[in-house]
Image 1 (cartoon, protein in one colour):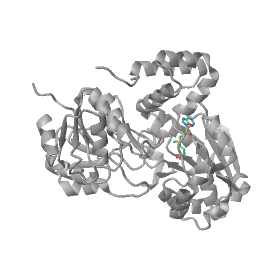
Image 2 (cartoon, protein in one colour):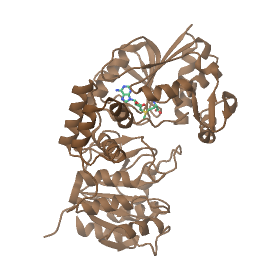
Image 3 (spheres, chains in turn blue, red):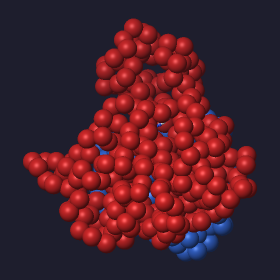
Length: 189
Length: 276
Ligand SMILES: C[S@@+](CC[C@H](N)C(=O)[O-])C[C@H]1O[C@@H](n2cnc3c(N)ncnc32)[C@H](O)[C@@H]1O
């Protein structure tokens, strides 16, 4: 019997935006579960990444995650600049300004670990291109809880360090080119 | 399934917070759970506590450990001129309104180690208001207040802070406000003169004065809806008519039952004015 995943979480850094755009475009106008996106972003740079991702992909609902906002299906939520994104038992977000993790806030590890604690085996984790190793531990945690893990193929990634670090740490379920990630997601939900 | 990390359950978390409340009278039960869990996990790792049982035991028996616990569990991360745009708007939209008052009273609630307090003092100085200001800066954590009182920050951060200062519309030379010594930036005495630092717990303590401006930034994100409502009510009680309230960039009046009393001065900078 096919397993039903309840949420998708995507992490990426350098080159990660491309991957996210590709995935959202292929999943547009939307999928019936929430997508969480954690990208390393420059602090104090106010960019409309939510609009860029929405307009550029045709994904209907793309927005920055708001403090205490309740999580809805069909939405893609972005971790806001300068905050860690955490998940509450009542399916709302919490934001947190505590120390950077892996020199990053938002940190991919922090969000992946928090999401894994909420969704347990029903989480689908995707790690994309990036030039540091944030996210590897988070993928490990998702895997521990029985969630599904997909990593962008380092051989074709813009920056291979991040996906490679995850592969070195975790036995992930799938390693695919970014063009093929959405196909995997559709197959699993 | 074996897990390396020590997962803290909701029940464990509740039990620890209940113990803290009974033993020390500090109520953290209405703090955002996910962050609490992370912090507690960190404390257990740092102190080599193998389980929640040991954590509770230590909390019960070791008062010094409780101080460390409070310091760890409350997130103290801060910086000077955090969100420069906020300071810019404060300078343009609020400070000119305060100029008409013979004296200005300001409250930084949850001021942490004081970077925000010194930032605003610099701005008030540049607007010619510092001499007429009384600045109350409070926090639940005595450790960070000591650092705030000293006004000595890590020299390594000054490069970033200078950029923030410029982006915030600073009109002078940032380096004029401190002297560098070894790896420290010691902020000028003149800035400190109007500042009063004191312990104040937003969960339990009452209003203690009336203010023209209250800043409470990046504190409410750690509180649940109910506690946010309670704390903003406290601010309403503590503001003069037409006083200003400044929240963190991701915080809002959404969970305040009487939010119609406020007018939004800047949606992006979370600046509000008490009008009713
Ligand atoms: C993240 S810091 C914010 C510092 C500064 N306002 C800023 O925005 O950079 C949060 C501060 O709130 C304080 N805090 C937490 N709970 C509190 C309470 N119940 N009463 C007073 N302060 C509290 C913490 O000790 C910490 O210093």
